[in-house]
Length: 113
Image (cartoon, rainbow, N blue to C red):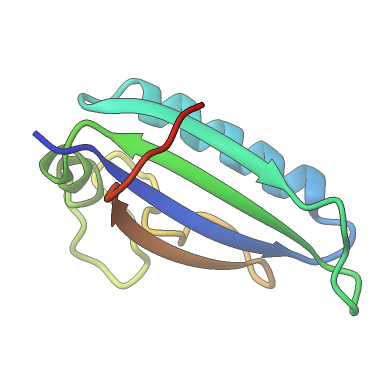
C-alpha cells in the first residue's frame, strides 16, 4: 500500500488564529481514532500576508488512499461536507472567512540526509 498525504493550505484572517488552531486540533484527535491514520504536521507562517492574514499548512498522512476515503466518504453525501460522524471533511470544517485549499498527494521522492 502506498501512503498518501492530504496537504491543506489554510488562510486565516487576523484574530482567528486561536479558533483555527483549536479546530485543527479537534480534527487531529478525530483522525487519530480512524483506521489508517499515520500522522499530522501543522505549520504556521511567520510572515503575515499584506492584508494581515496568516497562512498555515496542515499535512495529514494516511496508510493508503483507501483509508483516507473511508474517513471522508463515511456518510459523505451532503452539501455541507459532513460525514456520518458529524465531522465536516475535505477542508469544510473551518468557518468563513477562513479559506482552505485541500489536495491529496502521493510521495514520488523523499530525500534524507
